[in-house]
Amino acid sequence: MPPTEPNRPAPPDLPPCARAQEPHPPSPRQQRRRALHPADGATRHAGPVPATRRRHYLAAHWHGDLPLLVAIALSAAAVYLVVQGLRLARDHFSLVETPQLGAVLWLAEVAVLVIGVLWWGVGVQRAAVRHVDRGGTVLVALLAGVVGLGAFFWVAAYWWLAARHVAPDVWDTLTGESRPAEVAVDSRNGLLRVRGDLEFGTTRAVRAALDGTAGVRLIELDSPGGRVLEGLALGRLLRDRNLDTVVLTECSSACVTAFSGGNRRLIGPTARIGLHSAGGAGSNAAGVAQANATSDEFIARQGVDLRVLAKGSAVAHTDIWFPEHSVLLGSNLATDRLR
Image 1 (tube, helix red, strand yellow):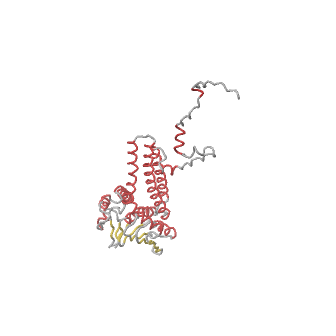
Image 2 (image 1 turned 90 degrees about the vertical axis):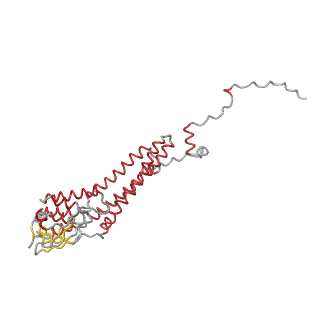
Image 3 (image 1 turned 45 degrees about the vertical axis):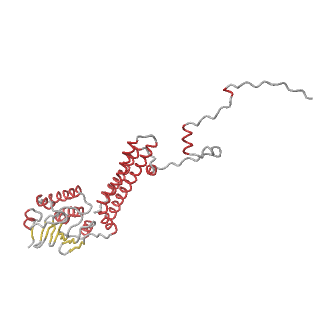
């Protein structure tokens, strides 16, 4: 028989340092990483982890990834600067001198303004929600969300009250549907006739006709009015060329500004000079007041009594005032009357 093995004593308890250690809980950084990438732990040894694609600024704002203050202030400043850049370009390439390009710039400005404000509002609201998720103050996020919501109301009011009224006219200018006044030269009599609405491009057409014909000294105006800017531009052109103006039928609204640019301002026996305030659909009080002031200032510099201009500006744009010939001559709006 094989010898029996002696009884061995039970091994003593191992010290705590010798025991198998339980896994340490993941660090906060690892916890955040696993929360963002649940499959990361399972594929850690399978290969490199692909880097998260970072969004560009426009997308980051739209999705609310930006800090709340950056979303509110910096994004608003970006929209403002782009709109101001387009506005400066539109001032340089005006509807008077370059109607088509000016129309394109106006439409681009409105599009950037509307889309930009909506982009800003959505991003601010989403950033406000993220602000709370990151532990930010609920009250601050709520106020920021209300500000972002206000962008939608602003865009709706801007489009409904102003842009939708102006856009069709600008579009007609761009497509050529809104045509400038008819310009005809009577070189034998040294006369140039301007007939029709003073739409954008009229001043440019008159300038081209004057440059192409020598000896023109008199401009006959027959127009119910038109664009304020066009009337001002035409008046300045006639003043700078030291030309005389004459009205045999009617010259109203913006046409009066052009008429006042004449060195001598003649009226026929049945001539009517119509005065009223600027205005129209989509106009606001500040814009109307500025248009009236600019036109009246130009006309007054031609030696016209301001009192008759003030009375004309007080007439609503839907109405019109035709002063008597004695008033026209007494105020120096007309300098002579034809027999």
